Length: 303
Ligand code: BDR
Ligand code: CA
Image (cartoon, rainbow, N blue to C red; front, top):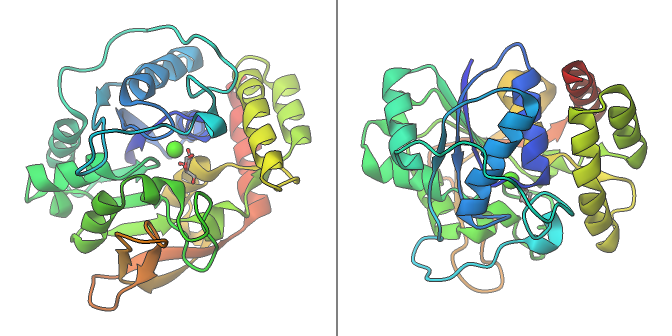
């Protein structure tokens, strides 16, 4: 499967990139960077650093710096750390971004791999909305968009109603749900069932000192954040779960429904059913133990 991950690395984004690299089913052909957990420049720098650390190289295209209609953005440093990778104080600049915006890269790749390209979007959906605007054929050319974002029956994580990726650019997310893109939404209903424990990270560090050890190290910060908000049994591998939905959809239970995003008020960023829109496959359940076990196995295989 030809895959591009649209990402804001981000601790669980690093897990998702590592997992995609380790999945034999996946041909990872690029990464596109968005603001979100970090500023966009940090996201693309981190994406290049993560690839280098994992021993591979793919094009990294930098995308949107701000949500639709906004002039300012404050990243989620309390969740992912000041540079996006836990307590790492400095992340080296390795290589360069490609000389093309994320939206232009997505549009070009979708046209070159018409009907074949899967996009796994694990950041605010601004780059995807930009690609839809840039090329009317984009929605048709893409095989499938798999989103980590939203909360359907589950409560929100950034507010009582909203999940962070959708909340950070509610307008862009609403444009995506209003589009003709064939879409799966892997929201908190599924990803909160895929928790990695401190013991899992201990095993990763022991059995795969380089890459598992890196993931374990940066995840200390992430575990501490989740403990601080009352999740004491581990941290969700949100973005890695979305990668698994690309390769193993049969392990998820989906409900098909049109969706829209609440654009104002207390419920800003909430994803709600809208029968006037094209159905999205919304994940309402996943085989959580299977997902964690496969993540562990694949990361350990990287060493
Ligand atoms: C999502 O928000 C970000 O903090 C994570 O990387 C993930 O993509 C979870 O709500
Ligand atoms: Ca993310």
